[in-house]
Image (tube, rainbow, N blue to C red):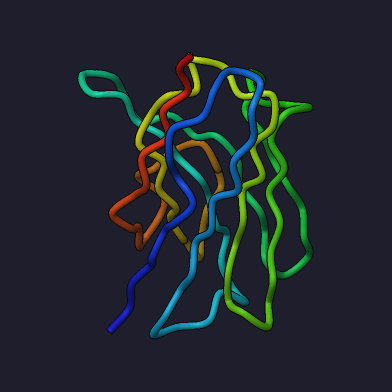
Length: 124
């Protein structure tokens, strides 16, 4: 059975950091793009970042550039999202997704699998 388990979310003060993990099971990520998305109730899904597992290429939405870093651990079949200098507007449910044939990394519709998500709340 193919699925993801996300972890690492929580409550953090503005300016703080969190590290999200996305562990895949039932399949290996070698051929996939893995993206991190976030959603606030009533809002559209937003593509935050993406990594191409095969060559390590990375992509970020403008609002997180310089603050978030996506990385992979192929041995652990896991993708991470290091989030620094967090802001209240980063508050959302964060989830990861994997797709084999992704051309527009920010579009959730191009991904094949996704997890349940982990909540990130940035508040003082």
